[in-house]
Amino acid sequence: MKFPLGEILVTPRARQALAASSQSIEELLARHQSGDWGEVTVDERRLNDEGVTKRFNLVSAYRTGNGERLMIVTKADRTTTLVHLSPDIRPPLCPNTGALTPESQVVERSTM
Image (tube, rainbow, N blue to C red; front, side):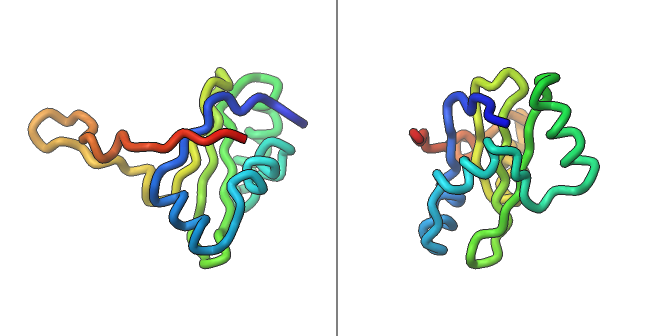
């Protein structure tokens, strides 16, 4: 059940969590790309399975060796895959403008 991952973006906190648990990002991306969605609900699993062919966003969740919840999301158009810790999904917003703050936009590019 392979699908393209596109550009792989990794938040600094996700990279730190993987390093702290001596886990490989390549291993988790391979699981995601093979259709092993990890710790998602039955409905999310069904949507992912359907989404591979119907071009929905694909979402996986895995625990690091230290128990942190790591999320992998591949966009519906398959141009980008984002790897982040679960709390990273609430980006900080500027109180004046509501725009994303610079620290919420910091990601590291990774290659597989």
